[in-house]
Length: 318
Image 1 (cartoon, helix red, strand yellow):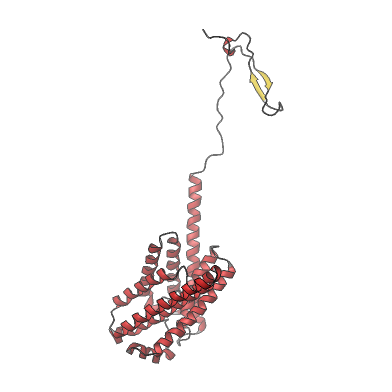
Image 2 (cartoon, rainbow, N blue to C red):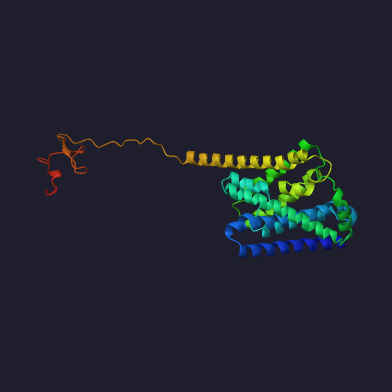
């Protein structure tokens, strides 16, 4: 359990350091610079460092520390709950930033700034985590430091199947974000954390379930076993395709719902004419010019009052 305690201390230290960086950046920088650069950089660094340490626990924990799978899955769930509570609105994921751009929720310059900031944050996370591993505070970290130069690929299946797995994970991830984006933040954070945990359990043995192009690039692209093009097909093309399909499905469903609502609540454009009462016997109708438009084109029908006492307001009715 000493290795697990060291990893938990690393998680707490990473959260505290990134939270301090966010608060300092919010106090010193303008709102736009903080939202597009500093917040995304700190969020990507926090996510990347925790995912690198968590991957080390998943790979070495069962045979070095004797960790059970349910312990690791619980730790993944709690980590992503903490991420959702502390990221302060940062996505730390290029596909989420591109989703906001496709939905016209972000401009092109701000999206490009977020992508650059996420890449910088991931590089900072790799440097921070490798520095921590160099301290060799536990047996697992000693082995990880020795094996880091000759890491194994996270892609443990065929390239087409890996792209399908990553695309499916990204599809359900973005569909969850779109379905819960107007919900309470607690419900959204719990739903995303549960989805990531399920994805790690089902797709983790095949592709490590990154569905984050920047995170996958920093973690596994330098490992031997596959070419850069094969990695790009799985970890770039797959998540981007899943994101686009989720956006199209959500937009199509919303358009169909709005059209159905409009069609059910639409009124007919034809007006049924009302029948006018027929004039009494012996009443002659003479056209008279109305006063509504100065006597031009307005015709009112008036009946002569001679011999018709009921038309004279001064005549008492018997």
